[in-house]
Amino acid sequence: MFELLLPMLERLGIIVTVAFIITRFRFFRELIDQKTLDRPQQYMAIVFFGLFGIIGTYTGITYDVHSFEYSSWAINLGESEALANSRVIGIVAAGLFGGYRIGVGAGLIAGIHRFSLGGFTGFACGISAVIAGLIAGLFHKKEQPLKLKTALVVGALAETVQMGIILTISAPFARAWELVQEIGLPMIVANGVGSALFLLIIRNVLNEEEKAGAIQAQRALKLAESTISYLRRGLTMDSAQKACQIIYNEVGVRAISMTDNQRILAHVGQADDHHQPGGMILTQATKEVIRTGELVVARHEDINCSDPDCPLGAAVIAPLNRKQEVVGTLKFYVQSEKEVSNVLLELIQGLSALLGQQLEIAEAEKAQELARAAEVKALQAQVNPHFLFNSLNVIVSLTRSEPDQARALLIALSKFFRQNLESTTRTWTSLKEELQHVKSYLTIEETRFVDKLHVRYEVEDRALGVKIAPLTLQPLVENCIKHGIKDQEEDCEITIQIKHVTEGVHISVIDNGSGILPERLKALGGEEVESEEGTGLGLYNVNKRLKHMHGSQSALHISSEPGKGTEISFFIGIREEESV
Image (cartoon, rainbow, N blue to C red; front, side):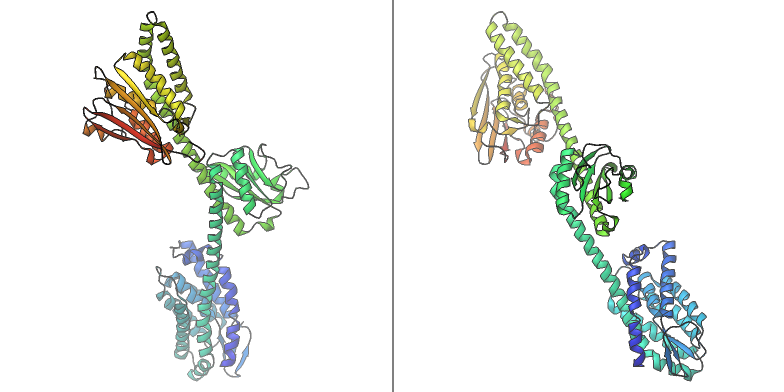
């Protein structure tokens, strides 16, 4: 009996090979992930595990109950011969992973094959193969991971049941009893251990692959984080060059290249003397990736390099997608196709996906910036006609009586509109320039209101170097004139305070006007508030741009009491590149 145990355990080496092969199949990965197989996948699983059972039969050890001799391989069995084999491992694996349907299906294939080989236990072994699949299926739990202990117990149990069926069906009983005494325990132990070993190998292989995938994902994420500051500017030659250089320094390939839909934007690494940026895309494989959006492994002849001594023998080309549209490609060049490993493929796939997301973010930020610019232009378009009409009326009235003052107002008006126009093309301006813009505006308004309006400036010069969004102060001051002091006949006062405080500048625009009703005060700055004389944008747009460009800490703060005036204030933090 123990003479048989060691050869049986030695044959388990075949299980190692089969277990590794089976992890390559998609249907088996679906089983491991506890997903539902479609009908073709179920048939494939039944056939594969059935063939696994047949392999276990053929690699069994023949035992003659008359001569008590063993032979190495099972081909055709005589009437006095039986098999000590590992057939049940494949059937048990089918039932445990796929349920009773796949287990019974695999058992039918392996059982019919065993019956065809003959021997006095042929019929009993054929039936026991089907029952083994049924038993294993009963232990199948879709929502729970399979344990090694379960595989060990089910493998041993299925073989124990087979021994019982042999004793029940095979004749004569005395011969069956002798056979079970000789091969029973070795087969129960070997197949129990084999079933557990099969599961252990599969689990380790898949865990290693998952670990490798996780490492590549982490590596891709690290590279994406390193390139984010460049690709958020969009896909340009400069951003592509810097991104490729970062990737090349971290990835062990011959060269890295990046293209848009038409041109080569960057090439870093070997062959940069003839693979130069700026040229049109000539490689057919690259065009195919742009057309289909699918990753391609290009061979040497597919690269179409004009240099016969080019060290780049193959390339992996991945698409760069932005909103499901291919906007370019990322290329990893290697010396030959042998260097194109699964690890490299996973890395470039993950990295290209992350870079594509960065391009989407860049486009979204660009769209937001364009919206902000359009918002500024909308403010200008609505402010200018009213202000221009009123200003020209004042200047016309002063032309003859006070020509010098009229000339000064024309200069102030031209400065005001010149800065208005410049604001459409600038993202930032200095607080000093913004204050000059306000002074030009207030020079005209003070003249228009004669002695009714007085403006005070409480400004710390060291705060004027801070950068601010254009057209921030002027709408606040205009709001004071249009709404705060419009009903006052005299002593209208506006105070502009600019003070340097810790880590930034505090700015306030204060009037002594009629104030704001409490119910209206709650809505100001947070939503568009229509008024009979205003634009409907004013404070809302200023507040939104302040938060967008300077952060939520720069939101407007409005305090007011009816009859006692209004104060609108905000804080601008000092950026790293600024000095105050």
